[in-house]
Amino acid sequence: MPSRPSRFRGPVFSAFARQGLLLGVLLLGPACSGLGKYTWVNEYQEKPPASDAAYQIVPGDVLNVRVWGQEALTTRAKVREDGRISLTFLDDVEAAGHTPALLAQQIQTRLKDFINHPVVTVSLEEARPMSVTMLGEVANVGAHVLDPGATLLQALGAAGSFTDYAHRDRIFVLRREDPQAEEPLRIRVKYEDLIRGEGRAAAFRLRPGDVVVVE
Image 1: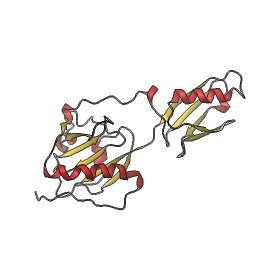
Image 2 (image 1 turned 180 degrees about the vertical axis):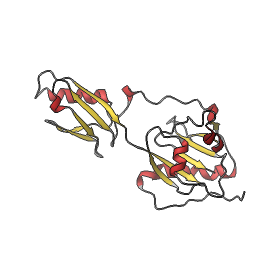
Image 3 (image 1 turned 30 degrees about the horizontal axis):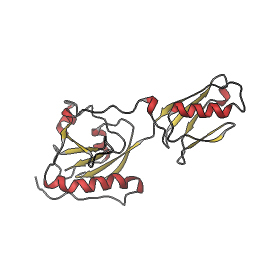
């Protein structure tokens, strides 16, 4: 197999992808000269994602806002890029950054000016599609929008085929689990395990902000 330092291809990246791209660029160079520190996916102890109760709403999420006994006020609302949703009587309501329970309390408080004893619930009906950055020896380098909970195999499919220089046993997922850590965790996966559905590789799920590097 021919070898050469990894290089980048593709169109100019949007601002949305730059943070993930910069992270990969900083780490890709050292990784090419040596595999560096990593954890095999079968040994990776995944931290559970935030529970539904702790989930913070982000722009692009679709919410179900229910006002009990007031079906005309019950609605399905998409959080706009400014972080707000529009509701009957209340116009714009700040939603981004709040948990569903906290947003429900705020809506309930504001509705008291219009309804006696309102009872409001807010639930996440559809999460915003996540962005994963693909770097290294893949056809389409850059940010790719995937469904929440997408697999690594789906991400590789979105990035197109491997290049002729790709090492299929050197697929790394860079993930920041600890905000205080200087470097993200590097999780190593073999493509053969993915296509065979072996071990924990096939069940591994990507998270927003992950960077996938194929060396």
